[in-house]
Length: 53
Image 1 (tube, rainbow, N blue to C red):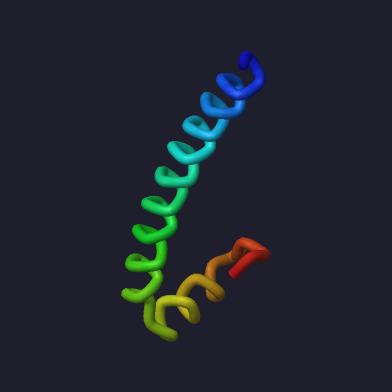
Image 2 (image 1 turned 45 degrees about the horizontal axis):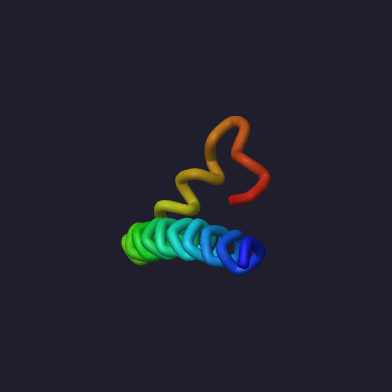
């Protein structure tokens, strides 16, 4: 069935994208674990700190 083949292809693509996103998320979480309060304070002292800080 053509519809089943399409679903299987889309599932494979979605799973690949999810795997990549999860890998990136893990890396970011590990980097965030290295932040200290002093690091954030230093960033807030910049002339134009990013709003998301």
